[in-house]
Length: 308
Ligand SMILES: Nc1ncnc2c1ncn2[C@@H]1O[C@H](COP(=O)(O)OP(=O)(O)OP(=O)(O)O)[C@@H](O)[C@H]1O
Ligand SMILES: [Mg+2]
Image (cartoon, rainbow, N blue to C red):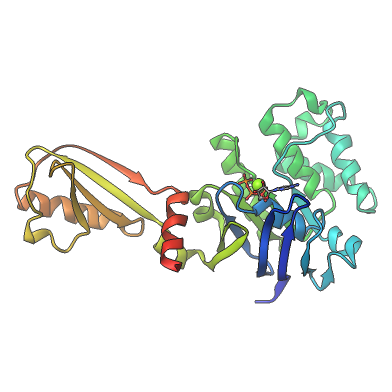
């Protein structure tokens, strides 16, 4: 597949002396949904802002469909829609005026039909004459998306699009992102939610302390990342795990009162069912159970250990 963004040796040291990006090399493929994952402060917003030409890199270059973001800013930027992480809106403008004005900023001719389409797709049509100050947080976030789509970009950046957004709106956004992808738009999003990346992305990149530590197809990555743990509170403590259960990744904890089973999210149903049957056969009874999923931060730590 052809690359639509080429990032070469990109570094950013802020005026404070803090190095937020370290020699980033990354290609974004035309038409893909790329999810950038990383803990707070990893450099996601800095990377996106640098790609979009809002933050000036200390070294390296970014090509947007062949146009250098620094040397050919206007052309490169007009191909990009950016939904920023922070809500900054002109409180007293109406939805319609804000979104139409955004389009004008990119030198595009007025196109009320397009603005209407965007507002309808984001369920903002009945709010078009509302001042922004009268909208809820989730609606304001949708206005940001409408602004980013106002000039018909072919590449869309979404920086934490679903932070603080309710479940219904989150699903609407996912639907919208898919529709955009079907219409040929390339999408780069950042998120803390592994479920979101799992749901949406074709490829996933992991950034930590300004470095891309891993880029992979989602399917390949989910098998490595999607670890879950099932903990069983046993009726009677065990001294050792019975031999018949050697096939599972089991551990005894809490003086033999707890049995934990670690598994990946793929094919979990089959293996849990089998485990339950084998526990039963082994005569092991439990009084309670719960599951936990490793947080992304845990995963990063283990990823880094793997790398070291
Ligand atoms: N203008 C700035 N001046 C100095 N340091 C900055 C500036 N902006 C960001 N940083 C620092 O750069 C690092 C990366 O910040 P960035 O906002 O890119 O992280 P992020 O991955 O988007 O985090 P989050 O998940 O919290 O949004 C942080 O340590 C941050 O403090
Ligand atoms: Mg950020």
